Image 1 (cartoon, rainbow, N blue to C red):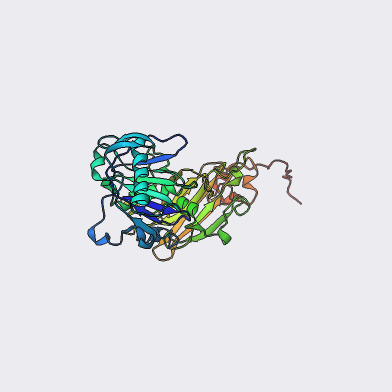
Image 2 (cartoon, helix red, strand yellow; image 1 turned 90 degrees about the vertical axis):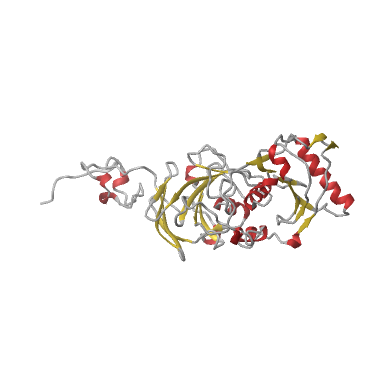
Length: 406
């Protein structure tokens, strides 16, 4: 099966069935990403299969901003020889998964669409091949795809055993949109993020990737970020955070410009320090098929990434943690962020506070116990903070007269 996408980043597809094989051996200058087999969750119950069509998957996860309808797709079946020659050399699809099989099959399917069926596919950019099940035995992955679609073509291949696994297709098409794998802090697994289909989840994309695609934006006025101007040291701000899949303005994006090393500068491809993304998610079948062991109830998610919204930005996202009501997340210095989840409601979302610290603890040996600021973001100021207890001291540059007036 062969799928093609048009230039406006909406899923306009050409789909073809064929008999061939492929293996990951990237051509020079190309970026290829693989999703390994066996990573997705078990198929949902039959009651959800009708809803789990690709059209609804795209629409739900993008809140209607991306559409994949039958009117946008061309579907064909292309007979491909098991062996022969192509522009990529000799190919043998009976037991081989090399670069020449991958691209020969795609090239021959394109030729079949144009010359045998008379289709004009010149303006269609994204092309996805869904393979027959026979290649599963010697192609040990669920899918692979080129990253980005800024040129004239981008490709994805779906192994036959994953042909009806929509999260796998969503994952590979995500690569074409410029998304990289999503991992998890403390994990060596390239797919460690169990809250994103670019990781190991059968779900929507995480907040980093939806922000990258323009499917969500910051809930601050004008979609702005929290930075050193909006979030000074010791300041605590309170937000009502809606669920990611229910509101376009559903993420708090914090860019810690105070942590940028001296001499560093931003560029279109990557930020010099990661931004923090705060979102609210819950298990909601069929599209948010998140593990019950991870999501027994809604959780606030903290992700980080150096990604930008430029088409040249190919950066991973990292899940830092999930935060339950009454718990908090602390980012180490120089970031110094403290995020507290006060409460979570299934209807109104999460109440969260964000504070920026410049030290791990206040001290009676410096100005931090006398400045009227909650420098360590523990919710206690100066004399109310146990860190400031102990012998009385005079801050640097101050003078004290201990003689009582008469």
